[in-house]
Image 1: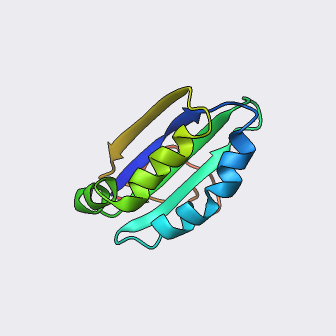
Image 2: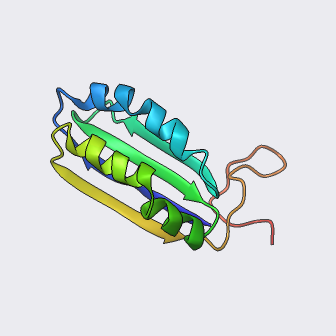
Image 3: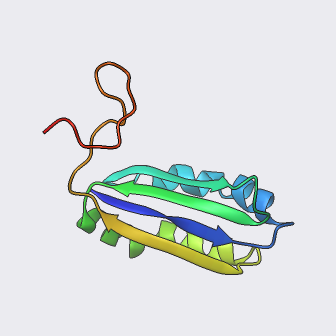
Amino acid sequence: MILIAGTVDVDPEQRDRALTTGADLMRETRTQKGCLDYVWSADPAVPGRIYVFERWESTADLAAHLAGEYYRQMREHIGSHGLRAADVHKYAIERFEPVYDETGTARADFFTR
């Protein structure tokens, strides 16, 4: 699994519009093969900040997205709202499990293996 996470900063006065008008693009991207999650979300504590969160089943699925029309449209869309900075990273996830164990206790350790 591939995780994309980070922040994008746009003109604070344009952030909410960027998110609202980008909703269709988020929905369309979620239809792509291997896309498990794709969302942009406002940070209520930092004006102009958008959090990016994506999960892809494989590197190949992410590569197809990055080479495709929805990715191009996303870059143009965000750029048109006063892009100021971006700090977005990809992570290869080899191991994951629920945060809560069978008793409902939140755990930081990996407990299922």
